[in-house]
Length: 488
Image 1 (cartoon, helix red, strand yellow):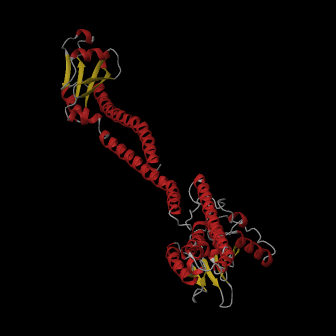
Image 2: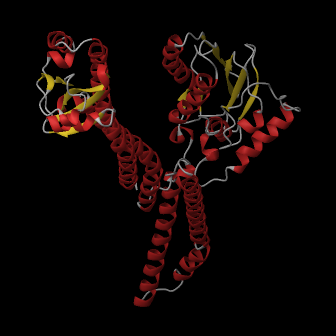
Image 3: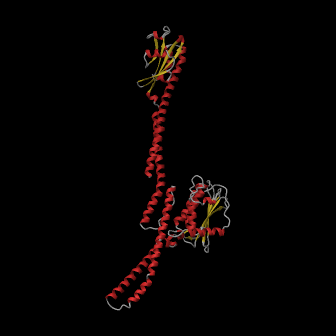
C-alpha cells in the first residue's frame, strides 16, 4: 500500500508539473523573442528623426553606428534618391547604408505597406521598419536580430523550471512516503500482533491509531484477544475444577483396591489407579503453572511499577529545554521524594508527554506552566497537576472524549484519553479545571493501592472504570464549570 501511494503521487505530480511547466516554458521562449524584437524596434525608431532631418550618407552612417545594432553591424538603411520619387522605377538609384541582409526588391516591397514586418533568415530574424522622409519618400530601416538574442535567458528559465518541477515531484514522493508510512504502520502493527498472538503471547495488544478503519480493526483485535484470554482462563479453571473433583472418586477407588487382595487383576487395578492419580496431579500442576504465568494473573511488579517522581523529573528536564527556546517559565514541585505507582513506565511517560505536549501545542509561546506532585507516605494515591497560564479549555467533557478533536487544527482528541485510561487502569481518574495560573489544570489521580492489572488482558476493565466513576460522584458532587477559551 505504501509504494502504491508513492507511485500514484509520482504519476499525479508528474502530470501536473508537465501541464504547467511545458506551456510556461513556451511562454518564456516567446517572451524572450518579443523582448528582442521590441529592442530592435526601439533602435530602428531612433533612426527615424535622423532620416527626417537629413539624407547625408556620413550623418546617417554616424547615426547608425551610434546604436547598439549598428555598432555590431546588424543595422542597415535603404533610402530612395530624391530624383526617383517612385521607388518601383528607381532601380539601384537608392542610398544603402550598412550591410543589409535583404535584397533591394524586398526593400521596395516593404515601402508599399508603411508598417514594420519581420522576416526569418538563416541565423536569426530581420526587422524591417518603413519610415516616411521628405519628398514623399519611404525609407526602410533593417535591424538583424540573431538567434542568440531571441533565446536570451530561455535556457536558464527552462533549467529553473525543470529544477522546480523535479523538486516538486521529489517533495510529493517524500510526503506520500511519510503519509503512506503513517497509514501502513497501524496495519503492520496489527499484522505483527496477530502473529505474536498466534505464537501464544496472549498479552499482545494493538494501539488504536491510524485511519478509522484500522482503528476499528484494532479495537476488534483487542476485543478478540481479551475474549481469547478470558476463554482460556475459564478453560483452565474448568480443567482444574474437574481435575480436583476427580480426586474424590479416585480416593474411593484407591480404598476399594486395597480390599481386592492379591492377584494379577488386583495388581493391575491398583497400578491403573496410581497412574490415573498421577495424571490428575499433573493436570492440576500444569493448570496452576499456566495461571501463574498468564497475563491476567500477573502482579504489579510484572505488569509494571515505576517511580513516578523520577519519571516526572526526567520528562520535565526534556520539556524544559523546549520551554527555554519558547520563553516559557516552567516550574516543578513535589517530585523530590520517590513515589512508586503501579503503572508501566512507558505508559506513564506517554501520559506525561500528552499533558505537557498539550501545553506547548495549544498555548502561545511564552505561556508559563507548572507540574505539581502531591502525595504522602500514608496516602493511597498520587496526584499530578499540570497547569498553564493559557486560555483554558472550553469544554472539559468533550476534551476527554476520545477522537473528538476539539482542539482545532492539529488536535486528534487522543492525548487526554490516553491519560484518562492510564488513571482508570489504577482505579483513579482524570479531571480538567481552572488553574491558579489562570489557564487549564489537568489533574491525574493515580491509585497506589490498585494495580495496573485491573485493566489488563483477561480481566473486565469495567470495575476499575466503575470505581473511578463512583469516586468522582462521591468526592466531586458538581462537575467543573466550562472554561472559556480554546478546546483541546
